[in-house]
Length: 194
Image (tube, rainbow, N blue to C red; front, side, top):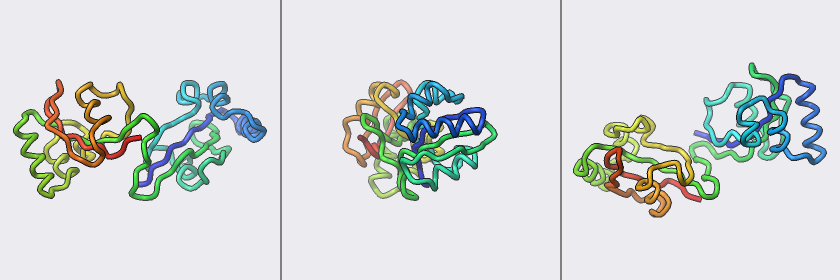
């Protein structure tokens, strides 16, 4: 599945959108204008940054631009049910390849079970050739299990300490565990780290 990162400015009228696009073209800062003018909660707090998302997570008109427009070019006005958007794609992955995490962040997947022995048994199955995602779907007690254990991208301070220590120090692509936390026992695989 393709992924993209984008930022946007949402306003009520097409004219306001055109005026802001002209200001950006003249050299004004996109993020500063988003903070000042955007009606979307993402605008005020983060300069319009929407983070990373996959197809099917945004409204159709917005997504059509994000997955086709050149990276780094401001597009719009784009009309949706929410209003008029200026959209800038900041990164986009090839189909089937996730975007690398931003600096200081990591992507990981995990399997959560109740006992250390169960965790060790599942690790043996994975090391024996079973697919991590399928083992997660069949066994993990975390809702992420239905996504093959995928937790997406996150920074330091967003996960419990024991989990985070592994994610920000273990080699990428190696299954770690059992790792004990207050939730149970985890197998953790760091899929990317920046």
